[in-house]
Image (spheres, helix red, strand yellow):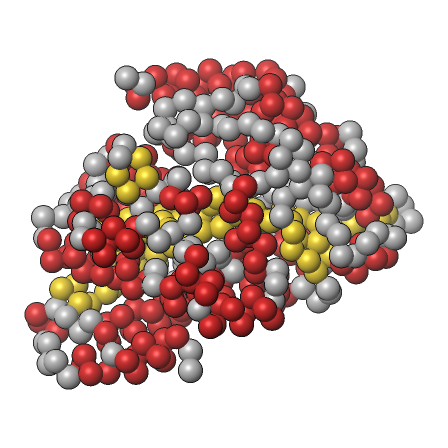
Length: 427
């Protein structure tokens, strides 16, 4: 019996309470995915199970497209006086939501001893992008780190140990050179590695800056260090993988098509979110491995993914209902079920102690890699006016990776732009 069936069975008695639809508190839940597909079915299943347990609450899920679409829709609705009651949005949207005064601190609503224990139940690495100004603003839900996926068959064919992924920057280069395949005309048919540089370029780049011992932003989200020498060195290495070492395609590598390139054998190694784990497991027709990030000065990855936010409203019943649904979605059993179904990291340690997760991790050890990497994880780049500050770095990376500007010049410009944007937030 799966977790939803158990919840439904345990909650059957609640349906007999006779609460009418008219008396139910209705809450709107924005979730960042297009309508249709397996994820919406999972979310719909969770909503159905919750409502059986809480017949006095009706949850209306609204599927709002990409993360970028979702934050725009949520803010537009809030400014029009029609905010969702809760939403899953990027953890890095936290400062933007705070500055626009449209979300409620979780700990101002959930303040019982049980609530405080719930807030403390999540991995500390995920809370770094969930807390600020002495408050908890987001609850980790679909969270991730970046991991390496490698094609074991390609490694074996190249004379490399198929059980060993690149463990250092030097091995990324040396392994990559052995993994390159070319056709009779000299065209590359298999690259050594692909690190996406569209979609979330700053995020993948932040893995490199982390490994080089740099931190891109302070905890308050008021300052960045884009032109730190360690950041410049990381950017140069990112560009050198294609331009100097020729183990990665030149130019911009598309976030969305990188997994497809991996499945089709066009790259032997890819960096992407652990949230792609289920996708890779379903579609890779070869033996593959999952490994933590390679090391330079250290290992590690930024965390990523989405948090649950509760929006401001004068209707305290709606806020209470939203908190109840948030607690339900992040029980150990549901956190485990979500991780198994999607590949995201189960967000609290006790989720890994559930029978379902123990069985899954035993049968599929790659699922443990992202969790274990949390010990070396850092907060994802997040600042006030985050989209504009991040865009300055993304633009710099595009210029560097396409050969438009030297690394230092591009990052000096990004630093100047970000400093200008952040000046109003520095007290």
